[in-house]
Length: 357
Image (cartoon, rainbow, N blue to C red):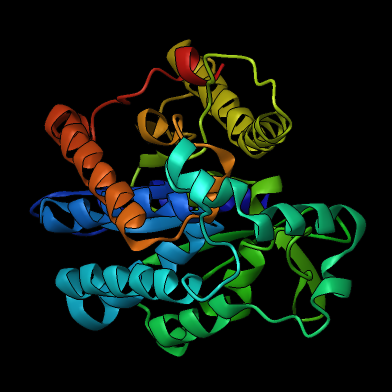
């Protein structure tokens, strides 16, 4: 009943979040390690277009980091502040990673794209994670991203600013297996790290006495908070986890990577089916128009870029690579705006049945 009440409450408000002079959308940002730099590029391009306002963001893992930095920058410095904050954040990620053990080897450069897939340290670490837990190989629970996030985001500002972008960061409760959504008033560095906690790499992140793992297991990202809590009916998903692979994986790393992609896309696929079901009921007159919201879905895909990269590239935080992904994200967002802006507020621009069902 609580969800129904929220949906009806949202339905009675302005479809554009109370803003005029453009169109307001919600964003759904997937996780994917260093591939999140593609999403950085998408956000950077959207921020340049003052016709677009963002009401809420549901996000997971690297998407959650992008979302929190975006909201922080927008709150303290407007659009240009958000662009600068995102650029600074990813630069700091690259700088911190440059001191890490997982650097590309000669073979990585000779045979591949410079991702550290053949790095001796990475090969040894991957083996280590199969026989030891992060509680054993990292008993001090050191995570360099904690310092980067604290430097990049004024969390108290996000919690206290009623006008800040609505955030819905996804994490998975380790004990119950349920999805946890961290809203603005709950946003802390631990909430962001919880959303990005891969259990074979990091100890579970505790927030208020509960342990959490990466949100991708239950929502990558979750769409329902944007439906229940936001006014805008337009949801733009930034996909950095490929839905389709043209070939069957055969090597061990490729198989594991594809298993993770399918697992991390599964909850999104189910939500898309539910959205399609409700839309069909409305179209068939089974549900009175206006009783439930008709959601307009949109997608920007990174498949053409990340689909050519190996799993190790998710750990490639070299600055030139991050900039390359950012540029690709900007180009994808620019093309999407050119083709679909006029449809915002009118219709979905992604074929849900063909893409997700």
